[in-house]
Length: 233
Image 1 (cartoon, rainbow, N blue to C red):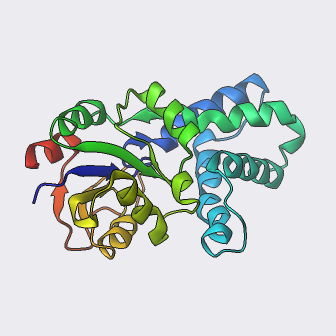
Image 2 (image 1 turned 90 degrees about the horizontal axis):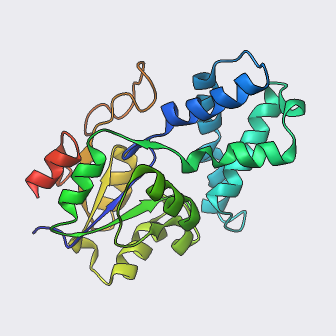
Image 3 (image 1 turned 120 degrees about the horizontal axis):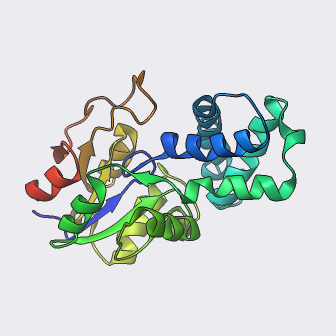
C-alpha cells in the first residue's frame, strides 16, 4: 500500500549537518583568530545531542526545545576546549543558530518535490517547529506540515513522537512511512506499525563513517536517494 504521508528524519537524512555546522564554526573561529578544526568541533557538538535529550526521554527533565539544548551543548563544548571565554552570551546564541542553516544533500529538493506529488510530506525531527521552519527556508524544503518532537514534547526514538505525527495527520501508522538514514529511527517507527524507508548517507559523519552504511532491518523500501524513493513510490 502506497503511504498517504511520508515523515522524514532531517539531520543527516535530508541535510548535511556536519559540513554545514563546520562552515559556520569555521567562520566564527576565523573571526576570532582561533586555530581549531571546525569539523572536529562539529563532531564534538553533535556528540552532546543524544546525551542532552536522554533526560527528557526518561522523564527526568521537562521538555526543552532542541534550540535550547544546542545552545547548552555549544557552551559545554566551548568550556571543555577552554574557549568559553572567547565567546560572550550573544555570540553563543548566534552560533547556536548554525543548525538553522544546514545545506540539503544534492538529491533532496527535487526528490522531496516529486514525493509531494503523491503523498503528504512532513519532517519528523527532533528539531523544534521554529528550527524546522527556518531550516526549510534555508534549504528549500517544502512541507505540508511540521511535525516531530515539539508536538509530542519528547524526543525520538520515544514512541510518542511517531504516534503524535500520525495522529496529527489523522492517519493510521500503516498509512505513514518514516524515512531515515538511521536504522535505529526506522526500528522505532516499525515497532509502532509505520512503513519504513532507508536511505544511506555514507558521509554524514565524514569519510570515516562506520554506522548506518547499510539497512539493518526488513524495511518497507530501501532507496538510493530521495529521487529514487519517489520513483519507487
